[in-house]
Length: 205
Image (cartoon, rainbow, N blue to C red; front, side, top):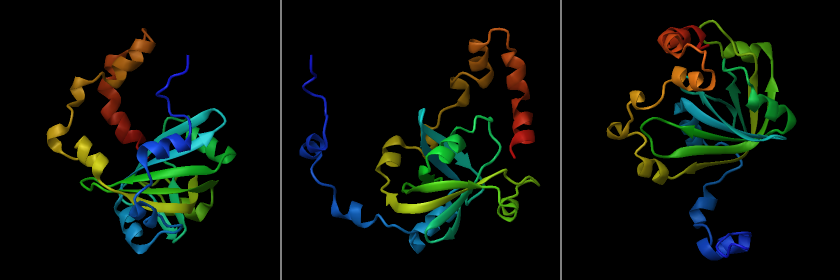
């Protein structure tokens, strides 16, 4: 039985939502303006979206601001810091260069978005320039900008993301050790949690 409420075409969407506000199209550029660069240079956090044969991936990336470096008005560089070793995003990029970046700045409602094409490099001088705590990244992602625009603060206002009163106590959620133990009953989750703070310090870079 066909669902009469299912949206199946762009015509259906446009009939429901109408046309976008002109300003939402005007603010989309194919380069990084001085104003947009200011946002990028203050952002310590970015969500990296990529696509590959297995599907889509979204990965959080963070560093002392700026998390990504503007090389010129059409290019940004993002170091690949130490992670869990899955390298899902990197696998996607070497097979399908399409990426999207969503930059967030603590306390700021607007976000900045970049869509473009990425490639990976092991260029020694570039990697060395991103050294943190004596450790350069193994690779740096070079993103060629196809579109760059800022997003209004409605989503962050609705979510109260930066409002301390809405912050959740981490103890209200399962710990890392508890979640792993649920998957591996013989795992010592308590010991894992106890060692985690020091492990973060030792492996952050």
